Amino acid sequence: MKQLELLHEGKSKQVYKTESDEHIIIRFKDDATAFYNIKRAKIENKGKMNAEISSLVLDYLNRNGIKTHFVERDGNDGQLCRVVEHFPIEVIVRNIIAGSMAKRLGLEEGLVPDNTIFDLCLRDSELGDPLINDHHAVALGLVSYEELATIYEASAKINALLVELYHKAGIILVDFKIEFGRTASGELILADELTPDTCRLWDEATGERMDKDRFRRDLGRVRETYEEVASRLANALK
Ligand code: TMP
Ligand code: ASP
Image (cartoon, rainbow, N blue to C red):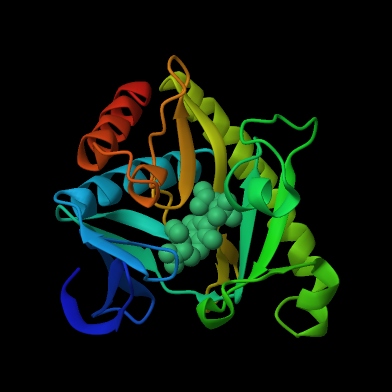
């Protein structure tokens, strides 16, 4: 599909109009940012690797009964996607305690809870995407209780499928962030990237970080790690 004008440019992606009102092209940039733009860098090849990883993962979810915005890969660094109206909320799914949850509650990273944890956050970077609960989200008119039920059910299924896929790649899926939206025809679908920028991935064999924490925490070998995730996923899906 033909790419038309730039509609929106974010920290790590650009969104382009296409000839169809129902489709956009999303391009992944090499830029990396963390801590709300305080830390910034360019990581060579990250755009291409994120396009590859996200395409592999979303295609796998599509084939396994999850409705997503992904249609097809577009060039090296892009994806053709369905247009949605996003709910202004983020769901964070946590299988292992890490990151902000460990910090906020004074817990050690690596703790494995008996249940899966679902965080709900308001999508507002000026406020730092604050943690909210279902009642806040409904009271603010962001989403209905029925829509939340669908979103949590889909998030749990997505988590189960991704844990299995990453396990085949020798990787532990620690946590990830996803967003949902509605298409013009009213379908509620997953509409987000799934990349090492938005997931925590730990090597099963060594415990090594294989995600954006390498950049956030200055652990080095960021580019090589994203390339390794892409290659392991491609092998796992063969
Ligand atoms: P957190 O530990 O900082 O709350 O992050 C949990 C997961 O969500 C982690 O995999 C990174 C991802 N994430 C995003 O993709 N975007 C965000 O804005 C935040 C805060 C987290
Ligand atoms: N919300 C954070 C940021 O804007 C996300 C992150 O640290 O990955 O940088």
